[in-house]
Length: 319
Image (cartoon, rainbow, N blue to C red; front, side, top):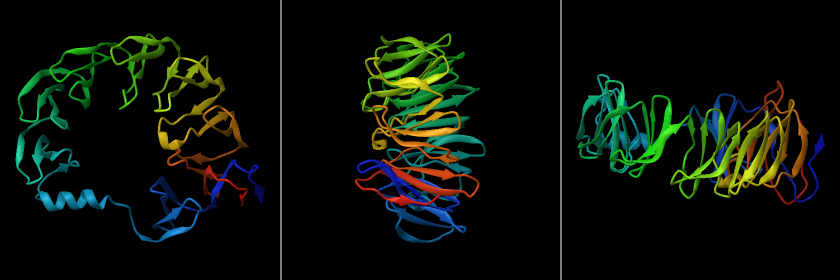
């Protein structure tokens, strides 16, 4: 029996149990698998629904597919803005919710986001609009659509950002380029093994001095690595958590509430957003990212899963 830290510290809220699989918390509950069956537990470990389902499925998405399309596709993706990517005989196109083919099944790949569509032809990607009019002929190795004005492209091993008509917003010159998440003004970038951060216009804001960088969270923090050690900086480049850990698992999600795991040797230490240690070092076998302020952790060969989060009291847990 081990006692959690003092009052107002994180502690084990869900008592470790031999769950076979666990999912992240969503809406205050998490799916768990026990003796081959799935159910839900809340943040205190109480059973929120009996473990009766053989598997987890996205019923809403599946029902949407069955209601609005015929079962005649080799592959079918989820609907986005009334359209979905579909595959017939190895060729991809676009359909609407009535099953009408709006972009023909003629492509090696299709990626659609709202009014912008990337298509693959002869092993290269181009860009068209939702009506099928080609805006940029195939010339990219890979394409990731954020919106019509920000499309990440790869070409000959380099990365950059273009608009839907192919105009370069950030030159296609980086070995590494992170994501410009909604509301985040900086993205990691790298050239010749050195990494820093640029803004949405491509201006360097934090110098390229790091060996590795991660995306910024919406609270203005990001994990970085230098000379084999990890820490966390803010969006002005100030070091918030010293670069002294063997790894830092920093999550750029607001619902992580700033909590993160840091590794020293084989042990994990729980840190808050300012680098304060909240629990003593623990030899944790497996762990999951923080979501809604909770992280699943697994101890040893017994596969005992428990969840860590914030609570305003002392509780006890068994390991």
